Image (cartoon, rainbow, N blue to C red; front, side, top):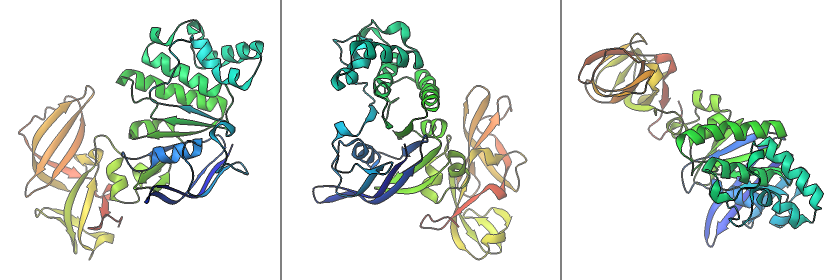
Length: 347
């Protein structure tokens, strides 16, 4: 089902948290509301769910405005980070609870519970209690319970926050698989860029109650709208260098990156350099000293303090032989640089 927020506004007392936000989620699309704590992403999700009253605008499920419809009447499935399972019920009873509330027959409930349990791969756990399950298994039960009612929209509020790194990776792919197999429209709230980029068709990056950029993960990474977007995506994170663009593009510390090209005459600005765009043979060389090296198995991460000031990160294949303290003359892929005004606007 297509979901549309038109001029959505939410206030808490005299404070306007979200003011006139617009968002369209296509039928069958999975989109991430990404951003730091306090940016408004969970507030938006809870308003869609009906858990927060809307102070302005419309929330459309298809052609139906549900802004004033109760949560119970909206037919949404919600998965929270804390699972919210009933400890005294079996897995089967937890999954079937929304159907019992709806008044469906025992035969219908049993059939639907077994079907959705198969989809999320917990068929063999139906007789267990939540305390007998791992965190990943509990999250699968919560996902099954959200889906068993055949909701119009699936809402996921930081669903992987309580899982360890290995389980998070497993559940990222599982949730995405289930979403694609069911074709349900889904919204994921997360502060984790890896979750957003690996699970979703598009990302809506939020800041102080507004969407700063909305696009596919690859487009947002390769073509950030401003400094905030560039700094939010990427692990290891992007590095920024103070520079000046006259005829030459020159770092604040004095080192030159050659002709300024399209940036000529811009004056003071800031350059964004991703780690994969700095290293041996990349372009115009910058002199510096390696001040940190981390081994990540098949690759090594370096931090280099440039002569004259500024620090860049580089990713090289493992076994390069470069060690902390080494002097390096590594290059920058100038064509892949991002340039920003002193206020953070993309140039």
